[in-house]
Image 1 (cartoon, rainbow, N blue to C red):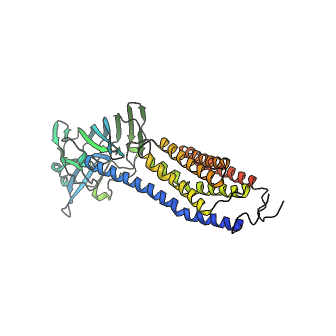
Image 2: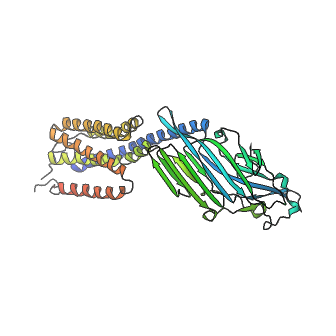
Image 3: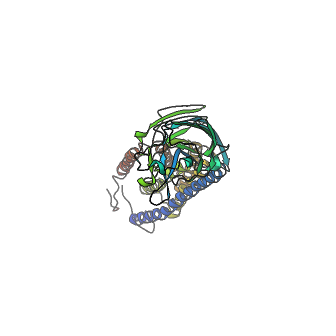
Amino acid sequence: MSLKGKFFKGGSVSMKLFVIGFLLFVFFPVSFLVQGLIEERSERQVETVAEVSSKWGQGQTITGPVLTVPYTNYYGGYTKYAYFLPEDLSISGDVASELRSRGIYDVPLYEGSLKFQGSFKAPDFSDLGVSYNEILWDQASIAVGIPDMRGVTEQLVVAWNESKIDLEPGVKSSFFTSGVSSVVPVSATDSQSYDFSFDLKLRGSEELYFIPLGKDTTVNITSDWISPSFDGAFLPAEHEITDTGFTASWKVLDLNTNIPRKWSNETNYYLDTEGESFGVELYLPVDVYQKAERSAKYAMAVIALVFLVLFLVEVVAKSRIHPMQYILIGLALCVFYTLLLSLSEYVRFGYAYLIASISIVGMVGMFSRSVMKSRRLGFMNGGIVAILYGFIYILLQMADFTLLVGSIALFLILASVMYVTRKIDWYGGEE
């Protein structure tokens, strides 16, 4: 098999390879523009979720309650605070979900009916270096951290032993950005524990998390959301997911966390709950932008392989293809991703991928047939594009084996090219 100098009118094989390489270099930023478009649409979705959440309620992480007892410093006369965590904390409730649409975007919202129960031991200052005559017992208070107070839908009343106390907005503790608090009766001579309970009606979006502040913390949640994602520092000890919703139960001990049971301003500690939260995310099973972005990362590989096939057709079948025709085919391959993105915002991703693939495969196949004056070569080029898109779709479904399968596929492609071109005399001489 030989390559005549006249085969590529106006240039050699090397020149044609140089032109193809230059075209690939031109399409390189185009592929990034496609990925930028996908990222822009993804950011628009995030903005829409944030907009809807700002009116309904953001993702919530509930912290508390925490018992705060102030005391005065004997030498300085200024007020400091000691903090105590509950002995046991039980949270249970039902989370009713709703899928709210804004334009083409869906936002998962929820409204939870939660019951908090537990108890505090009588505050013990013996190991905090505080004298009992310095303690301001009448100013003791409890506080509950709620990140987005707009999500609270009913007044909060805490049952504190035999008392009923209204919780008011605002917290004095520096480690709560927002929440509710109230002064509670705590006695210097009372050695009994303090039982508490309160109901929390709370709206939020996407996430509901808790901080395990009890020596023994249990959380039991039921919901009608059918695709939960349990996340955070602790997974549920038990959970069940059905077609009608889910149930989940967590049990966390204080030994599982790095949070002390009590501290004061003078211990140089503040409540650090980073990495301690756990809960559930109302997960939307199909993230079209993530899949579209992953598929777009293969854009240059697809264009390079198709250009390689076109070049080999020129070499083997002696069918000349103009650089402008390479450009048109490359643009068609880029349009696939914009088609995929726009369609997947309205229909399921699999259907969008199928429609976009059939459209581009048909376009490339018919164009190749016209350019090469051969139905067989047209079908062959269209079939190769179809195989590439089919293979990419399979890779999108294989999160754990993408690298392995992709590496094997590249090996087989390279082996095939080497086999097909093994008899070509690239210098143009006769065999």
